[in-house]
Image (cartoon, rainbow over all chains, first blue to last red; front, side, top):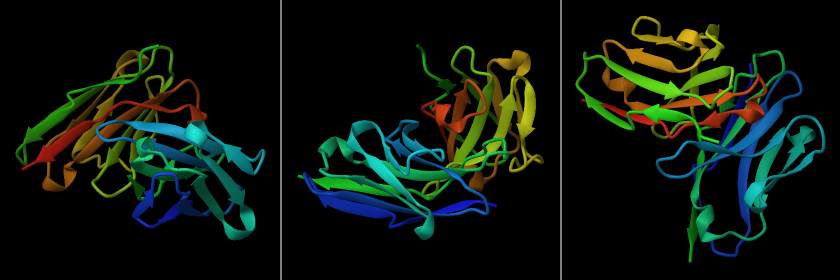
Length: 114
Length: 114
């Protein structure tokens, strides 16, 4: 069975600072990994995905993530935080052959201070 | 292109009452998902439909939850009778095929059970 662990339920950064949201996965076979963002009272929006191609994945809104098999990690980064980045971020994993059932982490709430 | 529609957006009921949620996926999307998102947790898949057939309902509490997708288009999720622990946001998502990177989420229905 697959799982993801998001380190830090709440991350606070200053506007213009680096954003780093951590995600570690557990999987017996090569996984597909995703980052989603959820703004208040809205559904989830896909930020980026890793599906066994390039290990450095670029997504929307300037976010990127790097798949590191040796560290079983898929951390999300953005060089410079913007106020509009304040939201909850979820890491998710799925496996081929599992009906692509997504397993989500518990989420990390990002606060951006002016 | 219209997104995934859900109604109602909010619902407050007392325990032991019944409640139903409705979802209309994006036109042409064959796969439909219902997720439960409890406060402070990531979404958990309850049931997945492919057209009007069930693909995965392993995490659906079948003694009280039921779902249907007649005609392979819109879907209804029902809880009867509701318990306090059912308080959550119920998210509907759809995808054109089984690739999870194409899941589009609706805004959700926030259920409060008193």
